[in-house]
Length: 229
Image 1 (spheres, one colour):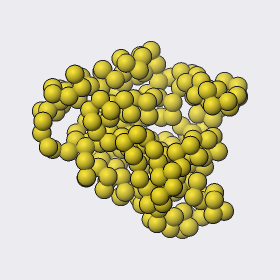
Image 2 (tube, rainbow, N blue to C red):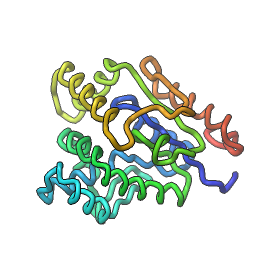
Image 3 (cartoon, rainbow, N blue to C red):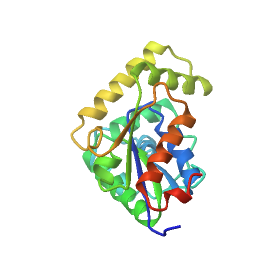
Image 4 (cartoon, one colour):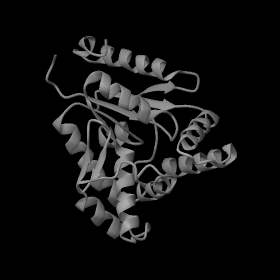
């Protein structure tokens, strides 16, 4: 197996299946899984805890630069040594993270941290600007997408599993608004990289998506044939 560090970048809108697929691929390949969305949620949590106005870009930048973020192999997220994995998976933190991630100074601070993580070992990194901004020279770039209706149904299922019951129309509206914010923000907007492989997951199972990406991986890397068997 080659010792060369591999960057597998997965981008796409909310509900496209990025987190699920990225975790499975990282486990399959023995790479570190980096959920960049969790990093923005962590800053959002710290901001809420410190009563920071989510429109205060200067203070948010300070928090982002000072934050010590650790992402464990098991998916745990630590902020300044505290395990906040469960705390950042609420709808409140999702909404707050969406606002925080639109602040250019925050994105610049966290992108630097993400690049440092990617420089240390092979990673599967997912987010909304990995292939276009964080690692424009990533070895493999995947853009996952799905219809709005399918993405909303998936999000609704996840929310209900957590005991959060709301209407499908409500979730559709939330995702549409999130798509609008992500695609129109001034700093690193959501878009498909020119050299990214587009996978529409609307009618694909998790296993089918995983195998499709592994095939791309094997085709694009010299050591891929030894992995993901």
